[in-house]
Length: 306
Image (tube, rainbow, N blue to C red):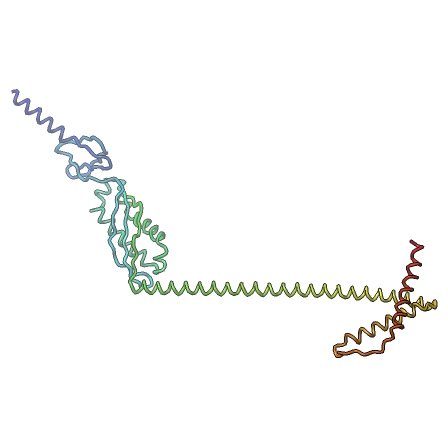
């Protein structure tokens, strides 16, 4: 009797242990009853009906990464390139991921590769190389929408490498070099143009300043001539008044002044090297004496008024 009880106890323990299931963190287990999905076990300690229920699929609920193998893609302008990438996805619904699609990872991988050919095949090579973010965004939208019924979320799709053929790479390098040479020539010609403009502007300003200086000099010279003429007119008027009053000194001053002017003109002529003139020293001295007397009289007239 004791042996039978012990056997029953052992069977009860085995029965209980068979129904106890521990699910690790980051995982979810599906439970099948006679081959049909019943429920999903959450992380932690769970109980199922032994011999009736069984664990169906063990689904990883953490974010996962798939490498997209390299494949050939023909662009819109008939250029063939090698493309590879990576896909990040996460299972949100364990039951759908387990029973809505067979081999989830393989399905996501093939769907991604097909859409890479579709998206990149609709673009030219230049766009393909310069708009990688746009390609990633378009792929993410399309693939995420397609995998949504499978209970998964595509979090990111990244194109890793885009490799054109070698001859095309060489042609692109030559084109880039020609474009840089063109920009350098344009910048150089623009610099020469600006230098010529600045030089011409400087010469223009110099000519303007020179013309203004010549104008100012001419004005000063004309003003000086005007003052000289006014002074000479005053002197002539004074001499004329003195002559009219019968002053001999005024007559001598007038004659001596004209005599000296005539002598200066002859002396400064460029074609005269030797000057021989009959000069009477006493006449010149008398004229100079007359000039002194005239100046003395003018000084004596002005003194009483002071």
